[in-house]
Image (cartoon, rainbow, N blue to C red; front, side, top):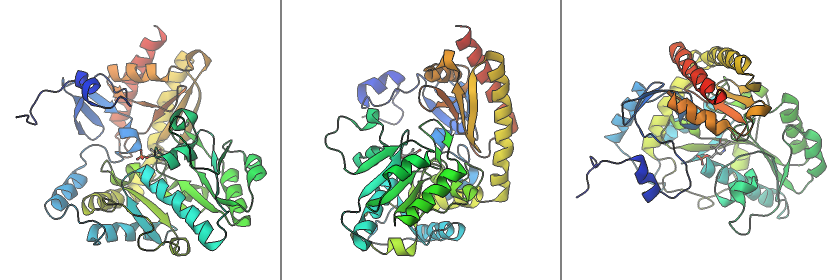
Amino acid sequence: MATQQDVVTRANFDEVILPIYAPAEFIPVKGKGSRVWDQQGKEYVDFAGGIAVTALGHCHPALVETLKTQGETLWHISNVFTNEPALRLARKLIDATFAERVVFMNSGTEANETAFKLARFYASTRHSPYKTKIIAFHNAFHGRSLFTVTVGGQPKYSDGFGPKPADIIHVPFNDLHAVKAVMDDHTCAVVVEPIQGEGGVTAATPAFLQGLRELCDQHNALLVFDEVQCGMGRSGDLFAYMHYGVTPDILTSAKALGGGFPISAMLTTNEIASVFHAGSHGSTYGGNPLACAVAGTAFDIINTPEVLNGVNAKRQLFVKHLQLIGEKYQLFSEIRGMGLLIGAELTAPFKGRARDFLYAAADAGVMVLNAGPDVMRFAPSLVIGEQDIDEGMRRFASAVEKVVNG
Ligand SMILES: *Cc1c(COP(=O)(O)O)cnc(C)c1O
């Protein structure tokens, strides 16, 4: 009989897992704070954070404690019943944001699917069945279901799966004139990441988001902020919309929300939520007590001045290191993003080689990310220590040197 102790190797991946990922050659087995160890005991500094997810590092003692306690109390009850951790977490999110209503799902995709369905439903209920147009942006990413991947719009992710949901249109990001040109009374929603993550770590300009707000108001369209990646403290504010002072009608959160435990949320107002009724949408797991308890503890820690104010100090240290490395090797044409969502665009000679740097970094003992072929991305824990940053950057610099010098 197979046991949990059976030896598994990276080679097994190619035999048993659907070939949709190309994971690194090593297998991480343990994490603590911003350090991770693989099967061979090699140690890594984690600047990737599980793709902007482990916002409090690995195995944060308070999260572990909550997981253990709730794990011995109640894991799952379904939405035939409500549960205390979900009600507490909803209250926290409402108290801290524009929102009056919350629904929990299990992934960013599902939160966005909920948001887009709600936007369409709201428009058809309150206005007209023909008010279905969704405006989204080039280089956006909103998830992998057929609806969300179509709103994301990148052909490499959305082609080949048959007919797509209709009436979704894409225009250049940060280009208000382009939005004006396609905006009309048939538009039900404008969907935007305040800071594009997967698409290259590009922050919206304040004028762009303000302009979107005004256009949506003029045309009775809903403004949907996908804060799956840029929310929950990553920008230095609890949500990026707070930094911009532009309030959306619907906001989605996931990734850091559970600190590594799968959970997502969609936030909105009473008025918009009121078009839905029992049965309009749902999820078996969504809002389960285990996920909501862990997210509640993560929220209490992230939504403090200590953590949020620390984000920009840590960003400065990251940027300082990246500038030094960039200057030494003429590597980066721009360092951008906000808070601890940092993008460094490769200069012309290194375009297309982000994955090479990522693999070399892992060899040197530091986990980093890319955002497309031309941008290095850093999304570490919001509570990463200075020593971890310095050591990780020392390792990243040695990886860069190896790639640059062949
Ligand atoms: C990661 C991401 C998603 C998708 O989230 P999943 O949990 O992978 O479904 C959606 N939107 C943005 C902005 C993301 O970064």
